[in-house]
Image 1 (cartoon, rainbow, N blue to C red):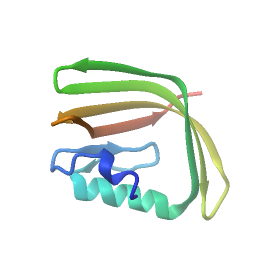
Image 2 (cartoon, helix red, strand yellow):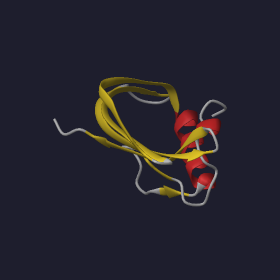
Image 3 (cartoon, rainbow, N blue to C red):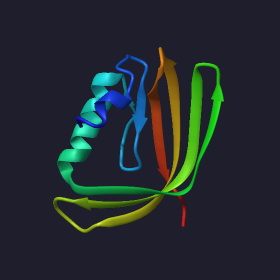
Image 4 (tube, rainbow, N blue to C red):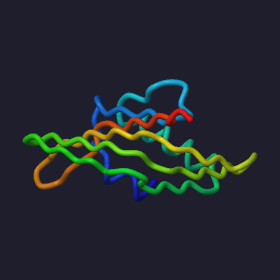
Length: 109
């Protein structure tokens, strides 16, 4: 979590939804809790880009899309290999770009 924390805006409007999520996490506290839960339940999470990232910038807002390969090894159960479509939105704050939205969906087989 120490590496994830500085990448995100810590605001009430940030949004996160990962492929395994049952609901959308809205606000920094919910986003942080979601990532902590993910990191606590998995022994390994490895994500590599398969396509992209395709980055577009318009003023103080940027977005990135792409396809990623994810290998998730839960602490209990079998490893899962999945392809996911990812869409990220960034907001420029001073000289730093911060995540305000991350959404990932499993790519249909």
